[in-house]
Image (tube, rainbow, N blue to C red; front, side, top):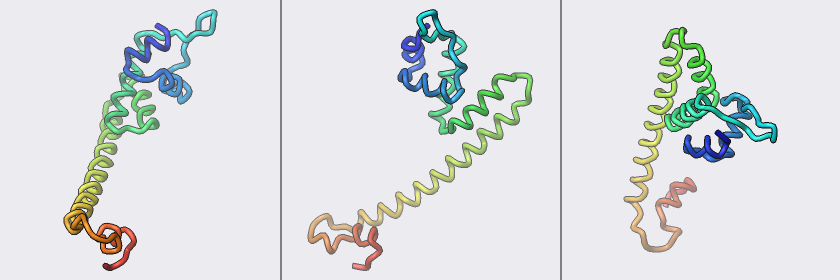
Length: 132
């Protein structure tokens, strides 16, 4: 299949396919005599893997590690689990931080009457570090 067909079937833009190829997440595609890239089912599976891993929050470096591990199936799955566990811990940490941000912003929104002079706005005061 050509790059457009691959991109369409994987649900990504064509530029993304080119980028992943440059980042060596996808192998360098074979080319026709006219210079067009040719991709196969293995490339489509790999591209879908990358896309799904991205939606789970894995970085491109981590995805590269996971792909490398998946290219050598006889190895123990512990490395994959360790990588996923690290990602999960990062997500949990970000969720906790978002919860803190939510609480703080919620208090500021509740404290703001929504009318009156801006110099009396508790949200702006909190952002500038001033007591009003």
